[in-house]
Length: 179
Image 1 (cartoon, one colour):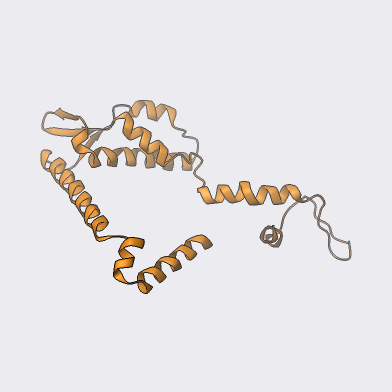
Image 2: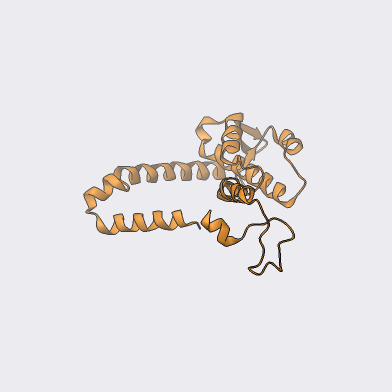
């Protein structure tokens, strides 16, 4: 976790323990929002139960008509590529279930499969747009702090007596913190 997350957590704890209930409902979360979330969860649960009931084996079947195209186009050179591909296909299995009443179904023998569509793919790609597998905050730190700090260093560090010197230009943790 980063410092900002701890700060936000402390802020939320203070609000939830220090504000009167009526103000909490306006500032943090209202009873109507909680009710809406419960209704959404119940709707998803009903979709899951219906899809499970439609298939004799109680397994939900999702059909991704464009799976071969994704298979060809998604990178597959490293372990992170495989994890990314698994993440995309997992999301593509979830979204059609959530939007069951808005999706087409495929009936093969006694099995009903809910079909993913291009809107699902578009949303999945917007969620998982970090194709390199590096968390966004690490990438931002590297680009906004590390690289400028490294580029601002013009000479190699040496010991106080001048006997030892860096072989390559580098930055220390202290320099990064100061930067």
